[in-house]
Length: 396
Image (tube, rainbow, N blue to C red; front, side, top):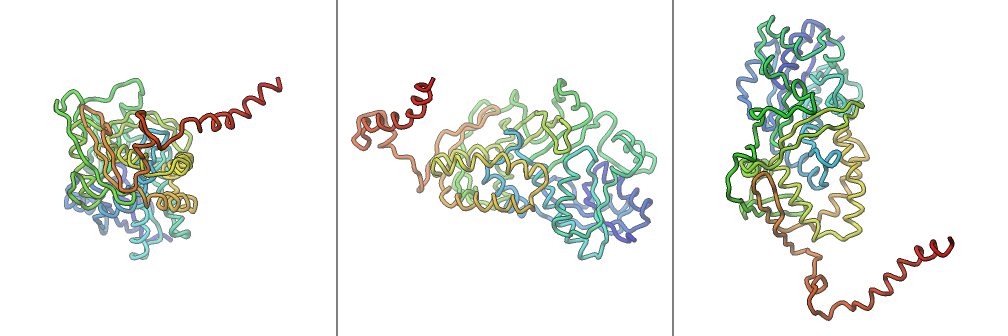
């Protein structure tokens, strides 16, 4: 018998309705858990709304530093990007939320946990894989797979009937997910992949048509693969990301509009804003280009697609993700130095990079006169590598 349920509560449409529905359906106490990952919400209003909607208790935890340090930074050390484009801002938040949810369930003696993810999406998988990885015996409730509502519009109508305040409206029905790393938009009017998103939808990023005409130069300093300072000012992980969000966002950097392949097999259009994360992604790759051995870099690149899929699909707490992460973190020991980026009208360009561990040697790379490299040696190198090609042609 279920007496207590810990709900991952966002304060949005789905989870607001879920509080009331769970109480009615299971006749159980519903404890709301709100993870503060930098959404920018008024936390007292979130608490009051959850209580008024029917939650018996509300947990609100400030997880911003942990989120950036232990989840975003490891992902950035890997240069992860799902299908080469999506920087995984929603995906990387779910395992942390689910982990804290399990901790609260254990503290409260709750038999079940619940989330507001739909049965068509990726988040249900991400939440539930984490639940089961950390507490195999937990009971999981997914309202979207049980309740009679079949659309967000029906949820809006239900909330209006029961006096539940929501931010989604009939005029603005798309779904929004925000944290310190990004904002995502999907559903509603965005479901037509030919339709351009409305200009007033964007939040973190200034449209490129309205950004300043002057470029901005930023020096990003790294230690062992992690950004630690901007323009020589050392900052905490969350503060550094917030600072970069402001600079890059004001200059139009980090907008993505893509159709992606969900884990459940559905193609979905997502629009994302990841300003600071985009700058960090670009800068880190540039620093690796001068600090990593060629074969190590190529080996890493060969597994990053798999690593990115693991995060997107929800396998953060899987043994394979830990194994790949250990490899990535091991090779990051030399990724220390500074990258200079030029941010201008929606673009982020690398214009300089330096490192005490640099493998770049000007004396070898130069096209000018030098005596370190015997160019005649290249002839034997080429002939040896051409041998199998010559043999293949001679056999014809």
